Each structure stands twice: as structure tokens, then as C-alpha cells.
Length: 451
Image (tube, rainbow, N blue to C red; front, top):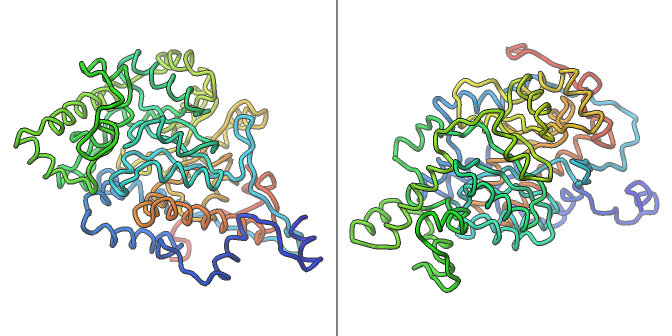
């Protein structure tokens, strides 16, 4: 029964993203994350992690002066909706189709590394939340849990894999093979972190978890990598913290304690540091790849292949020409280049290119968007500019820090509820009605217009 039919029959409406608001009001229970407002959410996450401040700053911080992060969010303020009245939008949905698969919404959980900094269960929380909501999880190569463990927690939920491209071809093949075997259906290759950007928030405290073996668990669970380190994984090996060797780490992560343990001759922490250094040499090596080299990954990944970190129109066209299935328009949330173009501005330019637009309309190429999404209205603006889906980043990590899987769910259900409500209040029933139709949906107002 449709929502409208349910209302006319005076019956309960079917479940939808927007019904979450009714659930909240009726339950009379405030969210465990403190607030659905993204600014208050960030502040609350900072408060609850004050004894683990460096971990919060690792997620929060950006490159240089953080100007790119600020510009990402400011760019959304240039666009304003023009709501249409007396349009029947009683029945709405946020369904979208990506690479031939229909999803319940246009939102995916962005690939963010080192979840274990903020919660002892790490990426298992995001995998579980994604399964519960039927929202795609994008698993990072810089995770604190293995591909296999995350896949198990995700069950029959949709999941993609994000590849930090290793220097070693055998290791690259091993990671891709494991991802395929675990049911990750699409592969995103991140291009903008061939080396790490200048991040004062972390540099001020010399805080880099990978150097202590935290966030390398996709590597320590990989037989090719571990064999290259002279280590063969054994099922009965245990870490001092329980579970498979190197899979479970102390929480909260304390680099000083790790240094002290090594100084005292602790073999486990000494070995972990060595593994962390060598894993970083593989995935953040400073080796900058070229377009020609993509042929290797394309040859060994049969599913959708997507490039993340694209900001230039010609780069997007080149990705299409070399056989990739899509791109993620992204500046890594402002974490790599200080003063980079806002991702939304790049999206506007890329989707306005007739070559890209034609390929999108013919279902030959897909444009995803990342960097700066905080609200449901942000999602709709990105869709109206031509994105077919968006990646949500920092907000769900803040939810993780406060309430684990439940916190992630509250963040995602809240933002999708807002998305669906705003869609209807603007006079539209589906994303198809607004996709790439910015002139029909909103007006552009230059920054400072009202100042």
C-alpha cells in the first residue's frame, strides 16, 4: 500500500526513510549521538573522545589550513532550492541504480581507514550498520579489521572495496582476489593519496597509527604480504589482546604505551611496528602511478572499476576512455591538498561536460560525489548537479565514536530521512525527477550576496 493510500484509509503508512522522523517523535527518545545536527554531532564527538583527542583529530583534521574542508561545505551554500507547490509528493522514494544494481538510497558509507581508533570493534560496526540499513559499505584498505571479518559482519549487505594501490603486483592481485571472494562487488581505486598530505593536526603530536601497526589489518591478514615479511599466518596464533594475531589491538590506541612496550623488549609490538612500516611502504609509498598502469587493475577486476579523487574534467574523460566504469569526484574531504577546488564546484564542471553527460545518460559511465556531505539537502544538491550517488564520511565516524553501529545508523537514517522529506517539500517524488536538472530544482547565488 502506498503512503497516500494508507493515509486515505487511515492506516499506518509503509516504512520509508522519512518514517524515521515519526519513529523518533513517537519514541520520545533523544538520539544516542546527542544530536542529528551535523555541527552539534561533531562537537559531541569531540567531547566524548576528549581522553582520546588525537584519535578524534585524526578523523577531524585536514591538510594545511583546512581551507579545502571549509570550502567543500561552503560550496553548498551557493545553491538554493525553489520549492514547487500543489504537487502530489505523498509517495516518495530515494532509489537509485548504480552499475545495474538498484539501491534503496543514493548514499554509501565512504571508505575511511582506522575505525579502531574510535571504537574497539572497528569496521565491524560500520559493516553491521550498513547491513541493517541495506546501505553499501565501502571497505578501506587502511582498516583495523580484515576484509573477511568485515564481510562476515556485513552478511548479505551490499559492499564495495577501496584499493590503496600497492607497489607490489602480487600483493595487488591478492587483495583484489580476496575482495572478490568475500563478495565486494565494486572496486574503488583511490588516486589522491599516493603519499600522505601535510596534516598539522597529526604532525603536532607525531600521531600516525600505521607506524604502530594500527590500520594495517588488511595487510596482516594477507598471505602474500605476510609471506613477504617472513611470517606465515597460523590459525592458532593469538595476540596479547585476544583473537587472531595482529587482528585485535589495544583500545584506545596509545602510541606512548606502544613505544614503552617496544623499549621494554615486547616482541609483539616490535613486530607490529615493522609490519606497519612495510605495509605503509606498499600503500602510501610515494610512488605516483600513471594512466597507462591502470590497465593492470582493469585486467584483474571484472566488476565495476571506479577512480576516486577526480577533480578535473579531462581526468574524468580520461577515466572513461581507459575503460573505467565511473569516478568519485572528491578532494579526500580536504585532507590532501590545502587550497584545492571545492569538490562540489568540480562536480558542477564535470557533469556539465557533454561527453560525460552523454555517457551517463547512456548508462556507460557513473559519477559519484564525495567531500562535504553533511545534510540531506547536500545530497539533493549533488544529485541535481549530476551525481548519481554520494559518499558520506566524517559524520558516520562521529556516530561510531559515540555509539558504535547504533550511532552510525542514527546518523545515516537521520540524513536520509531529511533527504526524503526535503525532496518532497521541494515538489519531487524521486531522484530521477531532479538528477542533472539543476535549473529546474535550484538557483545559484554567489557567496557574499546577502552580506
